[in-house]
Length: 243
Ligand code: IPE
Ligand code: IPE
Ligand code: MG
Image (cartoon, rainbow, N blue to C red):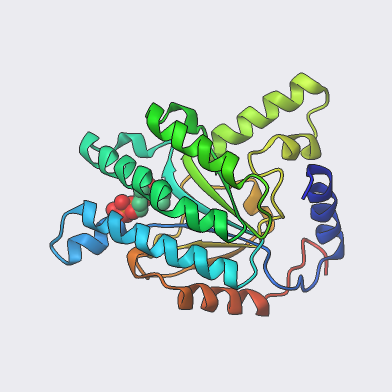
């Protein structure tokens, strides 16, 4: 979808209000890998590894369920506060994931997108990402947007500055500069592991998103859980401030 179409649809959806049909864009804060491992007396790295397995299944499910976009919070701009060995485990898993799964994305019409400032990641990962972006750029069935070194406040500040540089700072002008500008409006935001907070994720985009919080820890999250959240979404009446 072009930027213009995405913006028009966002405005249309807000004007229309009421029931909004099937979800097009779902985002997930994939939390609880550490607690999953701790419960089993396993190293945190094992929790993260099982978390990647859950990602693979959920991406497949999103594709089969006809979602246009799935945005996954993989590494926040605040996650650099973690110990070095955990960061290096996470980078290792990211490297392995891109290598092992890019083929499946390419073959199944999945477009990879990154939100956040991924360019400060280790250079070999930046190269893998850029190759993967180029390889899947023309795919159009489902967009998998992975948030890497992502912080929503930073994104909004950057977008506002870009809008100011071009002229008026309006809602539409900021929206057009967000990392998600080419995605459909966010319909449903899921967070696993029982935490009920946004942790600097998609603050702007969540303005009228439905929220689904579950105690399930991310490595245990299955396509069935995604189905459950989408079924709940289907029962919601979205009013966008109208009545
Ligand atoms: C989410 O799991 C993965 C990342 C933040 C990268 P956590 O590592 O935050 O797991 P908990 O919250 O400690 O259980
Ligand atoms: C949010 O989880 C970030 C990701 C899932 C990548 P955190 O575990 O970092 O969030 P807080 O620190 O509990 O808010
Ligand atoms: Mg956590």
